[in-house]
Length: 135
Image 1 (tube, rainbow, N blue to C red):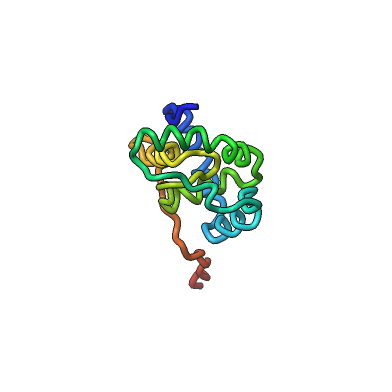
Image 2: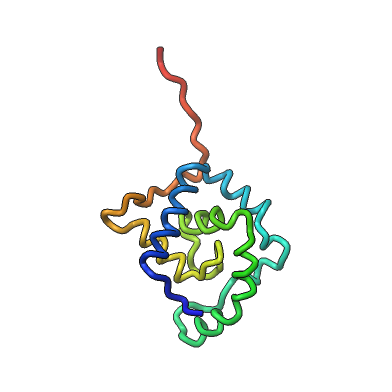
């Protein structure tokens, strides 16, 4: 298993994140992941990786995380979990949506890439309330 993902894969995941971003308010996103995520059946620490930066740590994490990533494969809120991490910037040290932190940051970079049709627009942490129109 290699930690790198291709530009095409990053763009593919970026499109999935943008779709979730544009259709689910952040509070609902957080609630869905917390309530429906397959990972909730396990100890939360299982999805957190070692210190960043060390080649040895990255190699160890790649081997260790295969089981966790398999859990993500069948999760009903996989895209929402990845979207939540990317949109809130929580891509430092844990698996989200089956992707390692470095892969999540690749997706975030794809969202920010100039000329990309799905440019990143960070959502508000407060649900927007539709304002009545003035008559």
